[in-house]
Length: 241
Ligand SMILES: NC(=O)c1ccc[n+]([C@@H]2O[C@H](COP(=O)([O-])OP(=O)(O)OC[C@H]3O[C@@H](n4cnc5c(N)ncnc54)[C@H](OP(=O)(O)O)[C@@H]3O)[C@@H](O)[C@H]2O)c1
Image (cartoon, rainbow, N blue to C red; front, side):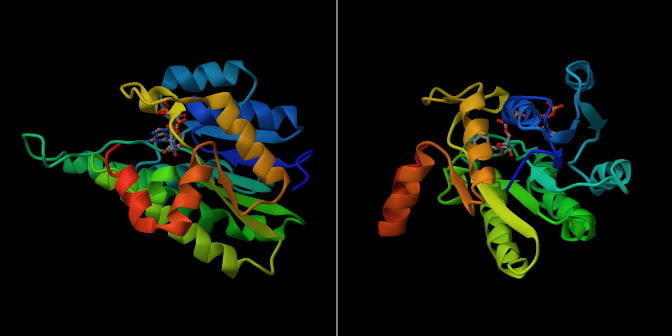
């Protein structure tokens, strides 16, 4: 995709990978609208010159509010980046937080589907358009401690693969972006080697520019190779993380 002059809606651009991505897209000449939830981060992103819609995407109300805010605006690129890792582990004492699990499922899976459905007429009307769904290396094989998060990412991966075939003869390209462990607040408690968010965003942008089907970022490339040879081995490696 030729990025210069395009207009993008990037969810979750107020922090982490999304915050780096909106800056890099702007540097490429893209007009960016983004969204976030935390008021202070929304304000900071506005102060950096971005148009930001405040919306909590963990419910249909928030997804509808975001769609309403961009109604009628030309949009060539939709990046479903906002996501969270809220999860539960039945090996720990106590009952799982079902409200948190439901919110995670909506944010990571339902909201992208709502936004895709809402923006599809606009995207299909553009000469060249793209949907970028941010999943995870964990969409390929889950880790034991994150069954809800991993299930949402595997589901969004599956959705992206089917959508790509449906849209094959339209101007809308579907890119799935699969980050490794990246240095953001989402991974604050993790001790794994982490990729800087700016480098992850750089690899997303490069994949957008070459119209790739997948941006397998960093060590996810290796995971894809292992998985193509032996899915059982890939699962054995990932389940421990
Ligand atoms: N970091 C990693 O290692 C990693 C690895 C694989 C995949 N990913 C995926 O990459 C994407 C970005 O992750 P990140 O690490 O950059 O996360 P992050 O630093 O926590 O930032 C997430 C962004 O999404 C927004 N967001 C979170 N919950 C939201 C909600 N309920 N409604 C609306 N916006 C919400 C946040 O806004 P607020 O701060 O205002 O809530 C923030 O702008 C996610 O889809 C994540 O699953 C990350």
